[in-house]
Image (cartoon, rainbow, N blue to C red; front, side, top):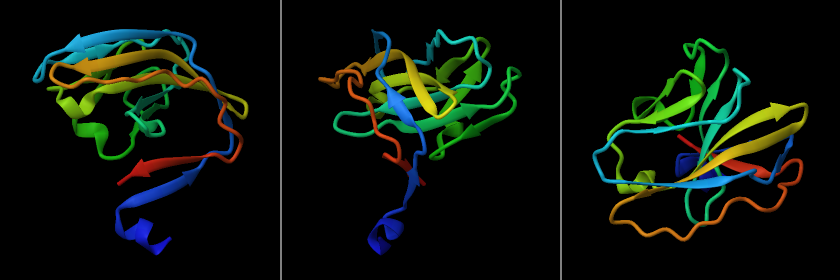
Length: 146
C-alpha cells in the first residue's frame, strides 16, 4: 500500500455498481485541435470519465449544478478540460494521450449508469477499444491519479 502512495495514486472505493454503456460513437481529431463531446443526459449533475486501453475509467469531472460553475475536477484535469452548456465536455489542445473512450454518467441511487460512450481517436495513435460490457460489482476499485 505504501508503494501506491509513493507513486501518486489514490485509491477510491466505489460504493455503487456500474452498468454497461448505452451507445458508442467515434470521433477522429488531429493533435492541437479543440474538441467538444456531447452528453445525452439532461440531469444537471453528471460525471465525465475517460477510459484508456487496458485501464479502468478515470474520473475527469463531476458537475454539481446546471450552472457548470459548481464542478469538481479530478486528477488535475481542470486545466485541460472545461464544461459547456448541455453537459458538453470541452477538451483544449488535444494530444495523443487524450485518446480513449469518454463517458458521461449519472448516479441513480447506488448505481452509476454510463451513457454516451465516445471513442476519441487522436490522429497518429491507433486504439483498439470496446465499451464497458460487464457490470462492476459493488465495492469495485477505481483509480484516481493525483
